[in-house]
Image 1 (cartoon, rainbow, N blue to C red):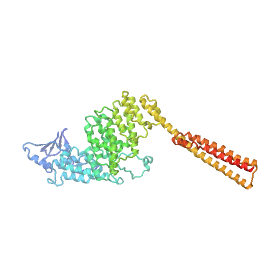
Image 2: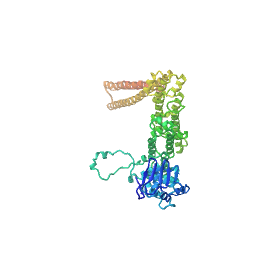
Image 3: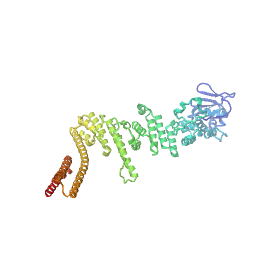
Image 4: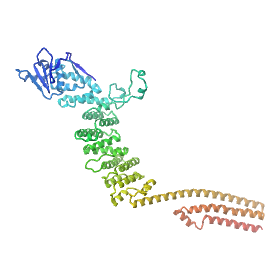
Length: 605
């Protein structure tokens, strides 16, 4: 912390009671100046030589009695006046970041300018601010903290505040590797520091400075100054949006109470409301500011609880909806505000889903997709899972109307729910908690489910669920049986097609081998001129009997399996080729072979 000493004479101020201050001197005091409850017994000459204000006041007083001047609402109070009085006497005065602002306001009030005396107090304070305070990170923040109650007293103080804000904002963008000043970032000791004994450490300590080193110090400022500093940081454009978002999150965590009762109490609600609305305004003013989804939902939750302005909440909902696919079910459990009868604000969640859809349409329009809404399917799958989980959480609320349940469920596109198990679970909870539903309400509620999208486990549970209408159970079982039958037919068809291919290839190979064998026999017969009756019978007869015995067994099996498929294509095939079945065709060919053999034997004999 920087400081500046003024004057050389020793301090001669003494106390004479709780509310009296006097100067120890051989000369009698000739003026009494009252500041607040404290009376200062002083001498006119040193005071009037430095303060134009006191000159005018003394000239108007009564000369017959000791002058007594009362300074009403003096900026900085008795302590600030004593600094100015000591400076007038030439006594040692120490200026530091904690008292320099009050001293400046007091000096301006007393008009201690260069016109009265060269090197007066205002000039000295200005030099100290420029050469020391504004060059120091921590001192600039301290000065800002001390100016809150003194701003109405000094126009020039506004200039000091603006310069401190600019100095502070400029230092946040400095490269962390070049930082040499101290800061209050509470980093944990590195593992390497714990492992190395202190006697082995080098004298020069090399410390890693994180990028968000400035966040904790900024968060000590009053909300108005915090806002001004953050606006200045954003205007310079040299700090990443992630760091700005971290500063907003840290400031909210620093000043918002953890207790819900304290948060909404009448003593703190106005202050908390101002803080939250300031954070929201800073967040929404720049799309480049990046915040986590959990922080955005917490901010929305607090804004809803303390009754922030509706326009501010609407703008925040629009921003939060961009990150809806990153949320958890617990993030959506925002307590409802009066006069809503439900425990949680389901209307707000409904608005979030609708805004999520609107944001997607706007993005598509900006990307020149002719206004067609093309949102990533994965995002909608995540949002659908999120909403189904939320419905399961709020379904046990006795005040939740079935129309609100149905409306929120239907806000999710049908394609975003490939499986309806989670939706069935939410509906089941709602039915168990709302036993007084009418048949029409149960029908509309169960109409949200698609029986074809329930898994076997959900089907088994639904079949035994007494809360579901009987018509719904029958429908679920019907589609489950149809799905099972379709799966069996497809499996059978795939198996039959595989067997048909395999058997057809084998039969073709067998026929080719038999044909080759007959060709060889005929060639032998041609070469020899004639054959023995016995050999001729064995040769041709054995070939004729071999073809039907093998081919018939193969084709019979294929034909029977083909008829077992049961689809329209197979039936039509059976109808068109009933007179030309593979078996009849094989038999025909065998008879022709046998007939030619008999004629051949007759001619030889």
